[in-house]
Image 1: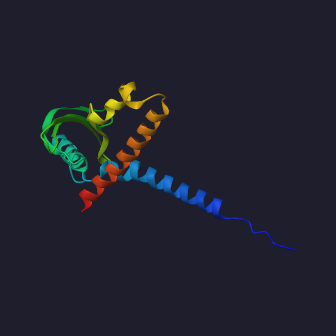
Image 2: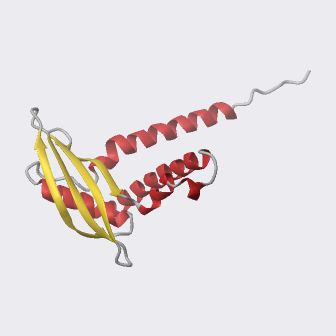
Image 3: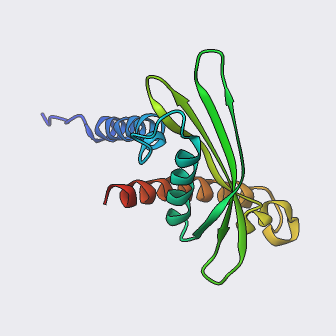
Length: 163
């Protein structure tokens, strides 16, 4: 009689996919938010916002110009939320704006809450039906590519901060 081997590769692939998903969760929730912001006191929100904005600009291959407007709010538990609009410039001189939002807690220090371009020229395609063609699957593909690009940008930012 012939012995039939059970194939183990589906289990191995599922295990590797699970490990990869847990790794991405760990990176995005615990590691990336605080990288480069260590050692900045809770009283110095401006330095934390500037550091996060400079790292974001460098990871997008943009030039940091200045913080345009910033504000902060102290929560009842002693935590601080700070946010700013940032002036950035492309290599060819085009002005862009970004939003940077940070949160400070006693246990974790400063962490990124949000860093993204405002009115990103790459996002115009989402609001123009003629540029995408017929159907919404192209929009879904575009959004998934943008999510993946944002993940890669975060990895670039971490690698530049560490090196």
